[in-house]
Image 1 (cartoon, rainbow, N blue to C red):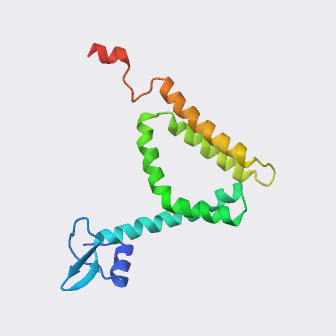
Image 2: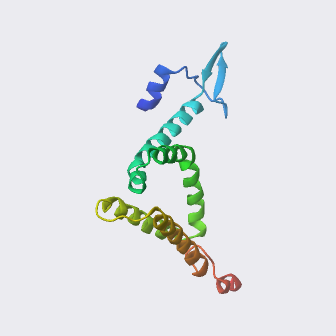
Image 3: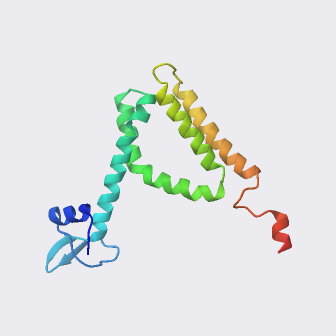
Amino acid sequence: KAEGWFIQLGKKVLPIAKGDFGDRFRARVNGRLMLTQLSLALIAIELTDIVFAFDSVPAVLAVTTDPFLVITSNVFAILGLRSLYFVLASMMNRFHYLQVALAVLLILIGAKLFLSEHWHLSNVASLLAVLGIVSAGIVASLLAPGKNQVSASDSQSK
């Protein structure tokens, strides 16, 4: 059975128990406390959260160079990035224009990063732009019938 490099490294460095232990992170095997494969998966997920948080440093530096804000924003990114992803993913089905709004938002952030040496957009203007773009996507989804919504005439004809 082929295993990935992360699992092989984890088994060399950490005491990983073989077998399925359900939703437990630790298990006692032959009197020895060991980590389960679920705990190894959790370590992998948290490491990717840290990588993505550090990946966002250039975006934070486009907004501010204050070290306190850069560090705290990355800490909050580590703590909440995965949760925010699941919130947005669940909202995509209901608000079908939210995906377009997020694409426009990413273009704005990219332009701000690219043009930061020549053009400065204040923090208040940036925040208002983010709120405005996301709000416009949500309002457009609520007002316009979308591909995931069934119109009243369709539901009556069935």
